[in-house]
Image (cartoon, rainbow, N blue to C red; front, side):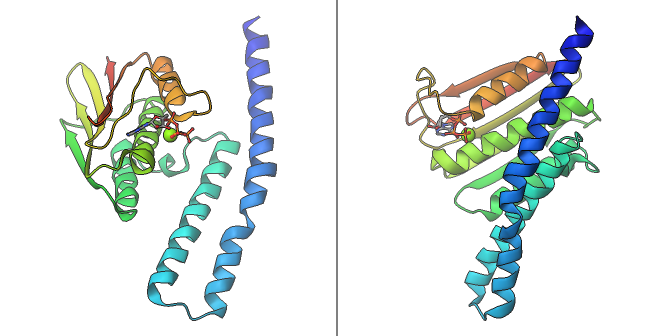
Length: 207
Ligand SMILES: Nc1ncnc2c1ncn2[C@@H]1O[C@H](COP(=O)(O)OP(=O)(O)OP(=O)(O)O)[C@@H](O)[C@H]1O
Ligand SMILES: [Mg+2]
């Protein structure tokens, strides 16, 4: 029975990998090529060139991620780097998008966590920061991770417009996936938000 479940999951993983590779990746592949072509053949003002480089880097990054997911190694950024370096890189790239002042707060002596835990924490931070960028209209945001003796605590907070957590939107995936990842980690998850009051997402993993 267990073996059948594992086989079915593996089949499903392969199907998703095929769809990602043949569908999403193949659609995106021409984008960086076209941008590079445009840049080579035109003399854009520096601000336009810099925006184009940003788009090129973003799409190339997405393609690397897809390749990593398809080969089953998890988030591309995390192949060589640990969680702290990856979070630092993430915050750096979110800062470049402007708009919100983002503080990264690392407390305690960081230690290596199981790969799945580090990947899930990274994904939760990434989706939360993306949500701040997309929805919050915040002045400030803070990503905090604290390595305490008996628990790991991570929070992502902003002082933006907040939202009503009781309204369940059916089309959106981000928060649902965050809940799912926290459940798989056996972590406590809190999503605190209210209209006009900002948002805080916190995850606690007990050892
Ligand atoms: N930090 C935030 N500030 C304000 N509103 C937020 C914040 N995070 C989430 N929301 C609200 O909660 C909704 C659900 O978020 P969720 O991440 O699930 O979906 P989404 O970002 O709209 O789409 P996606 O599926 O691409 O993540 C958002 O549409 C937004 O209205
Ligand atoms: Mg989202």
